[in-house]
Amino acid sequence: MSEDKKKQVSRRQFLNYTLTGVGGFMAAGMLSPMLRFAIDPVLKAQGGGDFVAVVEVDKITTEPQRFDFTIEQVDAWYESEVTKSAWVFKQEDGSILALSPICTHLGCVVSWEGSENHPERFYCPCHDGLYYKDGVNVPNTPPTEPLHVYDYKIQDGMLYLGKAKPREEA
Amino acid sequence: MIQKLYDWIDERVNITPLWRDIADHEVPEHVNPAHHFSAFVYCFGGLTFFVVVIQVLSGMFLTMYYVPDIENAWDSVKYLQTQVAHGQIVRGMHHWGASVVIVMMFLHTLRVFFQGAYKKPRELNWIVGVLIFFVMLGLGFTGYLLPWDNKAFFATQVGLQIAESVPYIGEHLKVLLAGDPEIVGAQTLTRFFAIHVFFLPAALFALMAVHFVLIRRQGISGPL
Ligand code: FES
Image 1 (tube, protein in one colour):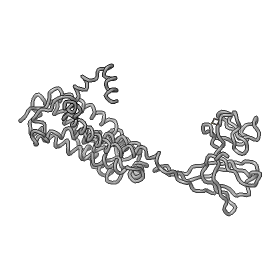
Image 2 (cartoon, helix red, strand yellow):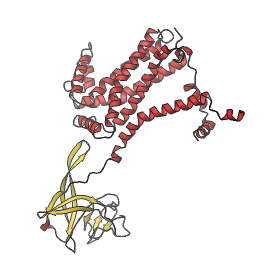
Image 3 (cartoon, protein in one colour):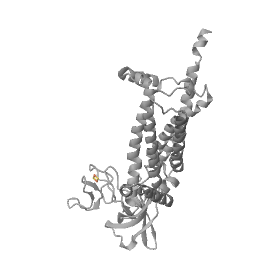
Image 4 (cartoon, chains in turn purple, orange):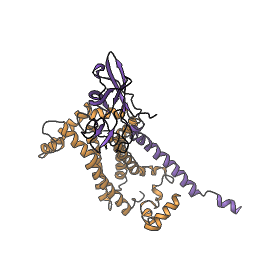
């Protein structure tokens, strides 16, 4: 009997538990919409990105050239036109490769043969990052992955570029 | 687990007396609705505080999206209300809460007034309470402009004219609030924003602290 009594919840404990429960429920009801509101950018689905006309296909050579193009950027309530660039060239098999100029090390801008000391390479001036012509990073330079590649399609002799994506390594 | 954590801290910094002082004290019988149901009138002060907490929290979250700029203010409000998850709820809390605060505060004031609870020795706390009332009205007035829609704009224009009608200093007061002698615009909005989220809340917190310290000092007024 006395053992039993010890395990019983006292009136004070019971009230404490109920009050904590109800209080917690109310606090959660109040705070959860606010937290969901705050973390919304993390949970928002990424848009696929539209394709934009960049250049006539017959201007593309086997030598990487830089082409600039503008996209409509929707930044929450602010809409603007943003200029992007791509290094575009014809590969040996005739297919087109459009590389993003954003260095995969820390985000500087690379350019083809940007340094006289490194011919036939994409060069990043920030920390001497190097990439081969196909965008693959040269080992033992700071970048850790190849330059991102733009999705592309060709329509009526024009090159259209979409979103730059990390390369899926074989 | 929580008990252990509490004990660990308490052993080192001895927080129990502090905690006792803030929260652990008896509720007199005449204030306890369990004894006399009519004692619910004593809840309005606490309810005002509760809604103020909601206002502060929802306001903090709203500033994650809101911009106090005439080009973008309205668009950012529209964005947070229609595009952000639960935006309608969070803005709704702040919008309706603003009115609820005034109602609760008014009921609290009525209770104190009709019970004569403001009498000696509690006159100071009445004064502090009235100051809190003014700060709240200021928060309501300045917050009203922030969405930068037509209603907000013209309500503020009226409010500024009221300020202008103050004898002698009216004109200066209006320029001080609007930031420009003629235009209700870019400078008005940034000023109202600063007043709404920094100056008045700071004043409110200070006054509330005094209000609560005085209650603890003097206790709740006795039964009628
Ligand atoms: S950012 Fe390009 S090498 Fe560091």
